[in-house]
Image (cartoon, rainbow, N blue to C red; front, side):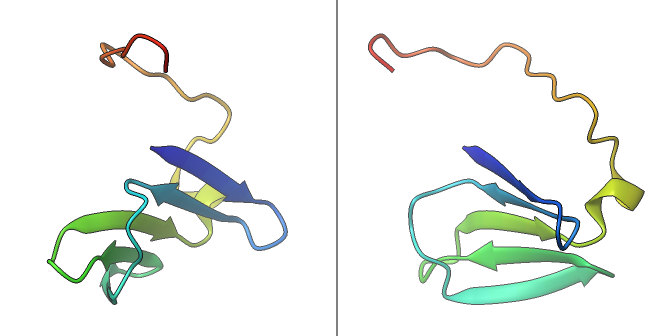
Length: 69
């Protein structure tokens, strides 16, 4: 998973997979879910992210760790 914040457009993209997106659906104003050809969620795009989220801190909890990763 990778978080990408773009300050020039105030958008946050969350990459959930390396697979390319083939379909996008806006689920609420400025929030778009991207799906691969099999219908799996591969990314989340959030416009005006600083107005919708607290971007000052990212916290992870109990993320499994693979050796060598």
